[in-house]
Image (tube, rainbow, N blue to C red):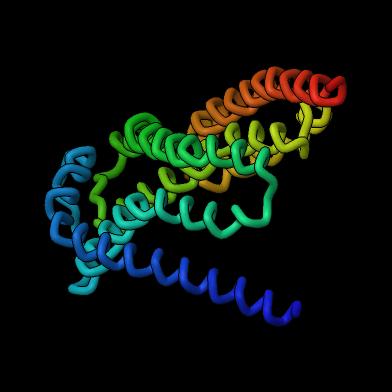
Length: 241
């Protein structure tokens, strides 16, 4: 019986992975057609034509841009398929809680991407340019430029999920404000480490990333307090009835 149930779960997981993969491939093919437009829009930030060091570099750029666009387009479907997979295994109350937060997860991911692209990336790039402008001639290769861009924006998009995850875990009773406050030092250490890893090796860039992450964490604690109080009130109301 357990083996049959496991096979059913694996079959369901396989079906949802196939749906995601097919949609990603279709999105990739569609995005590939618009890569030249996306490329022209992004390289305006560089203020110069980008160089390539070999014929294969342009393929890497096209595939990376198309893949990034396809990933963003596919993210809502990934979240939906993940939700449908775990939905039968959770209670009705948990379904209501998780279902509300799925759109917020995607929204904060997009906000993080936009923050990384429009605020963080230009700030870090301008800072690095000021270090070299008096002594060096800066010429960007397309591979290094886009690699630098993606290394900043994609991780920031993922890190912006922190508030939603904290609030969700609080609603589910797995976290509480007291525990979050006690682990503040550890959280700040982890955030500092992450900010250092996703930025160039200079203090200014790391601080630019760390500041919004720290603000998000503190906001998460404040919101978690409100969510926790409401959860306790609901539990008390249920126990009284």
